[in-house]
Length: 179
Image 1 (cartoon, one colour):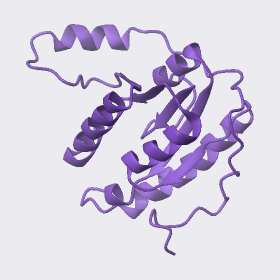
Image 2 (cartoon, rainbow, N blue to C red):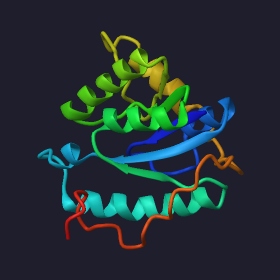
Image 3 (tube, rainbow, N blue to C red):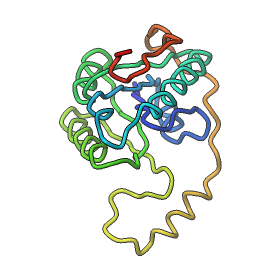
Image 4 (spheres, helix red, strand yellow):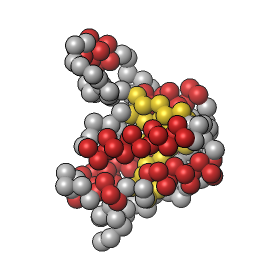
């Protein structure tokens, strides 16, 4: 089973991580509300409102294909540990996130967790940021190659792995669940 970690790219079309996961087996889509992330100085209520609206649409689109979005709240490593016990996934797919220092440290911790648990962590490039890059000598050629790739279609169908409850139409107005 493949676990697909939605971070900021909350869509089904032209989503290389989703496409790759679907090619390797059944996919469980996941979004994690990380309270520590939402306490960072560069996050806002306006960002959360957009994310919440996008999650509702994403869940609807996923359910139409056979598998709803699994929404979890908490520390990413704790969530992964819990889900790995429950589903024994073999790979975690995600985009390389262009974020802040906190997200970079979290992603490195996730990579270590995956290594320690025998889970492949497959990060797909997105936009023009390439991690890790020791220098920018060949960045332009890499960017051109990435941008020249064809758009990927959304999956027509997803195998049902679990049946999470549909997301409530009135997700909390704060990512901590407070109103």
